[in-house]
Image 1 (cartoon, rainbow, N blue to C red):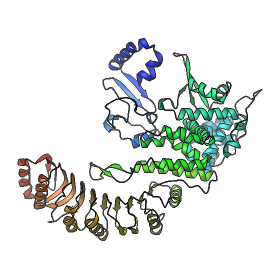
Image 2: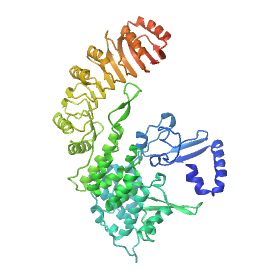
Image 3: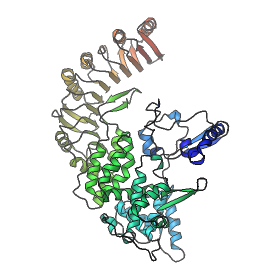
Image 4: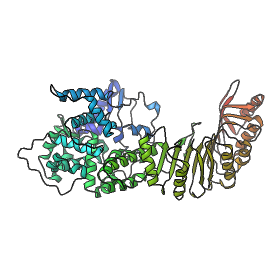
Length: 633
């Protein structure tokens, strides 16, 4: 990256090697700072033949021989959805925005008032609350534009599209119009833009900036999407046939120029990335074929999480062209993987689940909610936005977002693929949830039901693969377990647990993962456990097995017990069983009680001399034992 972004641009080809060697010497011997700006806009080169693992492709390669401080900036979603080891991060700082927006507002308002103005920051904050645009406050440069918009009494609605169109119109008002000829556009602007007088006056300029925004934002070289060269600007200027457009764009302040004295050229950028995203959305809405040609093509071979890069563009499109917004929502839904890896809550072991990663679901759900909200703000009341995966949580969702999400659920009730419901008994009652589950009988694959009341029948859901239930508020659940791969039963009612275990004993032939907290009927579980022929992973916590045996099935590879009481004879039988299995089995016991405890010494001695089982860890206290062993199958 240093070679490509610095040395190649500064030095002649014949001098690059010498310059690189000198730079490497400086980095290794001097204390330097390397700023890697915009991790969310970087992706590992796909055309390079390298041996990097998926984990190593998350961030650019760092040479630890360099005696340098590496400062990396990124949008938050990149770090939340791509796992970066804590050992690779010395300090983590999250910028929340303006520490005190009201203080900044007060300074700007006082400046605008001068000696004669009478407006106050309190009045502005009331305006913000009335329009429901509090989310714009943390961005200082947008906040200042919004204050100016309010101060000059532009007529704005609660639509984000309308606000950005008004801010651009206000910036265009700074352009001198003496003897300037404006060109009539071939395209009609979307409604909230068409009503902006200054944009109509400078229509050719607006079209040029929109074109430039799309071209730069969705460039294949993500490193130049926010800061771009004069050659990129010139190429768009030639297509728009307007040499004077660049001067007017700079005069408005919407486009900024940075002179590079070393290379005798310039770099350009938009006032803020959200302006670039808004203008790009406008250009796509005026040229709908570019959605497939540009945006879809841009993300065709990228990691699914990169789709969050397009979130703000999607929200703007929903407010500008709802038909295109509907098509885009269908496309976005295809980026949610149907499977994911998950570290068990009671174990560090990662297992595969037949359901998407919750972070991706919540992120895309949040994007779609905001898009739906923007559509409503622009009077698109009969929209049909697609959302297949839902995450209902009355702690994480505000009342407004909960209401919008429920409307989206009803809108998509015939194509729901996964749904997570945490409490939400008032917002999503038994009747409504049951109706959705039955309506999605041909698509539903996963249900998570935590502390949610009711009785549910999922027998008609033929492709159901994942179930997670928590709490005794669930009174009854009927389901077809023929294709069930993952079952989590956590602190559930005894009747619900027994019903599930009985169904699994008869038809749960595909079950691969079973996780339980506080098993109630350990005798029933002990009897059917060996029947799970495809089971790979079992995790049991906070359960007393009494004298009942625990005999693992043939394909088991991981057994985790935590806060479990087990008889010494059952433990010996389990260890004898895994010693005979033809595959490696990893067994972890944490804070467990083996009764009688006097037998532990003998069990440890047997493990020490066993040729088929190796001890990874063994620790005993006065009250419990923790150990980790592996079979050598």
